[in-house]
Each structure stands twice: as C-alpha cells, then as structure tokens.
Length: 401
Ligand SMILES: Cc1ncc(COP(=O)(O)O)c(C=O)c1O
Image (cartoon, rainbow, N blue to C red; front, side, top):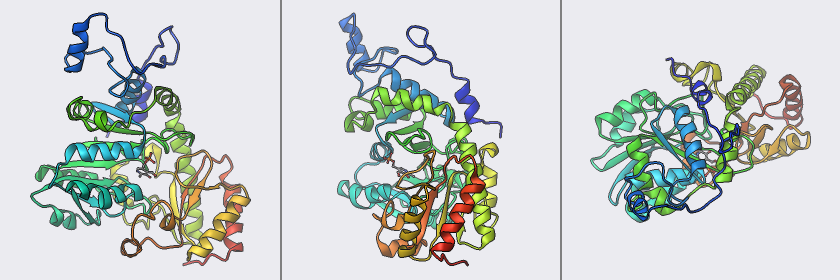
C-alpha cells in the first residue's frame, strides 16, 4: 500500500491573507455578499467559494477539514465541536425511524450510551456484537440495518476490527461502514480499506495537547455536503460547530502528528514488551500474543507502529486505584480520562470512560474492574519511566499471570 497519510498532510500548502505561513483565522460568524443574488445562490448550494454563516462553513474549518480529508484519503471532511458531535451527526444523518445499526460492543462509553439510550427515542435500535466475529456480524444484519459501526482499535479493550472484511459485508448488504479511528490516526487508514465514513475525536492524538475537544467526519463529497445541507443536514441543524480559533490551533498541532505518533508507538511498544516479559497482564496490539496481531499488520501504515494505548490489569479496582494514585504521585503521568497527551494518562475504564456500559455487559466483553488504560506519553527516557512504573507495580503487589 503506497498511501501515506502524513505525506498527504505535508503536501498541503496554505498562505494567510497577508502571506502568513499559517492561514488567516476567520474571525466572523457571518459573511457579507456584494450582490443579493449571490446570497440566494449560496443558500441553495449553487455558489462555490462564498461563505454564508459559520455554523455552515468557515474558512478555518474548511482548511482543517481539507487537511483531515487528505490524511484519511477521503474526498471531503467536516469538523465539529467534539467527537460525539461527529458520531451523533453521522448516525442521525444516515438513520431514520425504524432503522437498525449493528455496532461493536466494545466502543467508547459515550457512543455506547448514545446508541443504547438515546437513539431508541427516535426508533433507531442497535445490536451490539463482537466485531471480531464476522459470522456474528453477518447474522445480526436485518432488512432494516443501515450502518455497521466500530472503532478500528476499540476503546478500551484494543480489539482490532477487520476493516477490509467488514467493508465487504457492508457492501454486500448495502450498509454504510462507519469507523471511529480515534485510537489509530495515521496508523490505520479505514477509508483506504473500504470504510464509507471515518470519524475522529480530535480531542485525542490529533490535537495532542489536551486543551480542547473536537471531532471530524471524513467521507465522500456527497455525504459531507448532505451533512451541511441547510434543510436536512445533521451537522447544520444539530449545530455542533467548531470555533475557528480552535480549528486553527488544531491544524497547527496536526503538523507534528506523525512525529508524535511514532514516539507514542515506540514508547508504548517498549513498555508493553517489558511488562509482558515481567509477567504482567498487558494488552497491546503490537504484542505477538494479541489475537489480532497478524491482522493489524495487514492493515497498518507501518512507520506509525501499533499506537500509544495499552492496558494493564491490576487485578482489582482497589489495586488499580492505589496504583494510579501512586504513579501520579511519582510524576509518571496523570490520573485522567482521555488520551493522546504528551504526558501519560491513565484511568480504570470500568468505572470511568466505559461506566455507561452495564456491569453485566462489561463482564461479557471481558472488561474487568482492575483494567487500567494507559495513553503512553512522549517521555524522552522511556527506560527510566519503565523502571519507575515497575517500582510502583511491585510496591502495590500487582499480581503476575
Ligand atoms: C474512541 C472514542 N471515540 C469518540 C470519543 C468522543 O470524543 P469527544 O470526547 O471528543 O466527544 C472518545 C472520547 O473519549 C473516544 O475515546
């Protein structure tokens, strides 16, 4: 595969209004028209290059969207105020009352809650399945199914979806394959593998500085335009618009994404291998024992590695809590949700980012109380980090396998 997302970002060239090396930030909610007729044409979607109102589009948001579309290899992209703003808009755009969604059961807790508790209010129901079991996926499709939804690498269990095979199933059944690629920017390019729509929470690796929330929807021109349609577009009508100042700052951070992802992956791989060798219960897609290790290697853009997220099972919630407090005290990272920061972040998802998933279902999917999710930071001396972390693990008497 010759596709390289970081090269596509590098190849973009923008000039600011006064020749600045950064594009000018559009600091307006509304835009003037010199001719009244142009306003009518813009409303009807017949005039390119004119801006109407910033909930619809703004120059800064279009620049960021263009960069993200280039990164994912899609025709277009629309940014939004959060990852959930993107996920909810996509699903409500595609599905109508009576429609059905087949979703992976291991997904971000907010997405799970949206599908389980919110969309049923509009008559849109979801079957949650083990996405690695393609037979189960096929069996769950009904005549009302419109969407196949999953994360490339799932939150928090790090299951890897077989995007190529899922896209075949989607095509055979006339469904849209929607992939949340938040955990694996640059590493996996779902659209190149056949996904129809790719979503990111920009809040995480892509922005990388934990100073804002943001989201993006990448897809065909036709789909992105439908989301922005003034009459029936979910992004336009639900209004999850990103502010121009934020899109400008995310765009600047995106330029170092390839360097950051390589370092996140290198550091996570180092720790995963060491903890595995020590006998701790680690999950990381880069470990040979990971059930989808071989599959991952058939899909990834190799130079970006296996990603920055790993999990370690502390055995119980009590031990996980003590360990996380100790690691924070020793300045190894922060006890915080979210991911993709320069510093390591850790939390116990069963009671935090996946707490929306009922305990019984957590058990079924293998999400234990003591599981800690680590978003590994950009530490320069990862060997030193490992030694410190190991001291903490030993002090808390974390059990080995
Ligand atoms: C995989 C995944 N998708 C979506 C989201 C939601 O994104 P946001 O918090 O930007 O709305 C998250 C947030 O944690 C996530 O981890």
